Length: 70
Length: 374
Image (cartoon, rainbow over all chains, first blue to last red; front, top):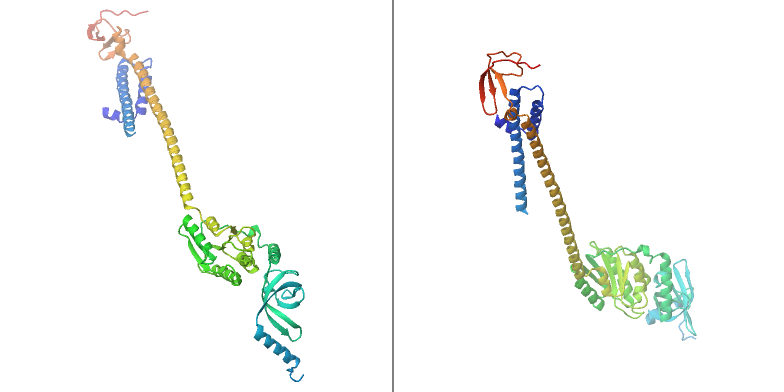
């Protein structure tokens, strides 16, 4: 499951999180459902965080390589 | 009377002519022209005279050095002859003006005639190949002109083929030899791409060949561009006027024809430095441009990442706000009957087994009383 999620793009994960947030904010949501959605949202946020960190690492690597070449 | 030879008229004419041929097959007579006239554009009649005598001459226009007129002094080579009907005359073989005044006069008349024909028109001048690969040189091979020309040519520029046709550049045969050399070059299978007719300075008489009608016409008729370079100071010869380009001396002709390799090398060096400098400028500006682009790219990606982080932070905060656990920590509790979360007490009754979930524990409890709020 985790592997499957990590193969999703940032955009896909981001819109899933939007969806989770929208569902959580429904006024008549059941508490159990809210807990489930919350857990799902946290996972998604974590995945997104990993994506951003990975992008930052890549950027840093590219910059380092560039400065070594010059 | 009886001792004297007796002839018929025809016999007499014949004997006189034989005697003349024996004694004076050729004569050269100098005198002033009188009664000059041309008949049918072909036959020329005139008298040569001095203070006391006058002799008739007869020739063709083709033998004339150029236009002649009464009062000019000329030197005529010819054959004296007694004509059976028209009497004594000298048949012209060659004729040339003599004495400074007549030479100038003859030259002026010829120049006027050839100019009227358009031989000296600027529109006829062709550009010279620069530098040429093959030069046809017409001069005396023994002359200083030849040495000067080839010396300057080789000093300035190498690898030009020079073909010499050795001619006399003064005296009677000069004119015909120069004309023949011009024709020879023009009919060569691998003809030169430029011709140079040259000689050093000399007296007006020495340079006469370069102002004859034949040479001037041959220069004008050359299909190969022609330079005429006569080393004199004052008068310009007619051949020079007819040439595509004239030069003041043989050395000057060489200077006109080829560039100076030292100057060319210097020019190339200067150009090379300019190009190199320009290229450097291009690189510098290209580098600057790339740096600017890279900076833009870098800040764009930084901005986009920062935005993503900010957005994620906000959404995580929203997520936390909706976390049921947060509510429990504030003192709220989740009450379940079985697995169902109780949202209302309407269906509860005393004795019901329920669980109460707190932030850090779950309590098992029994309903004692149900108090419904108004």
